[in-house]
Image (cartoon, rainbow, N blue to C red; front, side):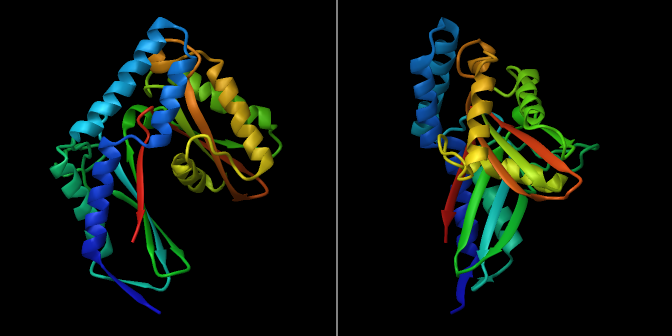
Length: 280
């Protein structure tokens, strides 16, 4: 049966999710930070993690932004094919974002043109991705993407004949070159396959995977573990202070690709990897 969902409920859900994402650090990431604190031996790196953890606690308790860069709003909609939306979906999502940033007193970071750069004042427009799925529900996932880490994310078109070690070197060097700029310890999303744009999209979606969980594909799970080990050998450490934890985790998503190419995207996300999700 066709189920009808009013766009107003989508607006309210988007608003609530962005307030939650901006103020409440995901439990898996908070646990990852606390575990990293136990393993660190350096005074500076321990202090940096203490401040990060305390900041997350205060943000949640007082409903304040975890980070002053409350980023661009990215929304993923997985819409059931037996669902009908009453009203304008895009307007509902945009209004939800606008309300979240107004009610949460979050910084408006979006400019209306990449060259003219006049602030829109509403943090609009959001970036919206849609997908169609079986069923009569709508799954909504949101990500707050600050640009301290977005600015050091990278893509590269590899040749099909390039060894996996070359891909690992690219990812590790990307983190090394980023240094302290993305506010480590980071959570790395890697997209491999598809077209250039698909690889980037996969790298963004990869950060929704709970920290500590690996790909179901054994060879990709091995790659994730190898990358994490090599990245943490860099000793960039929390906030660039040196130490054992430069990355909390690595998540790789793949997609079939062309015989002549191998796109790889590295999405670096900071210690405040801010996502939230709900289903209507």
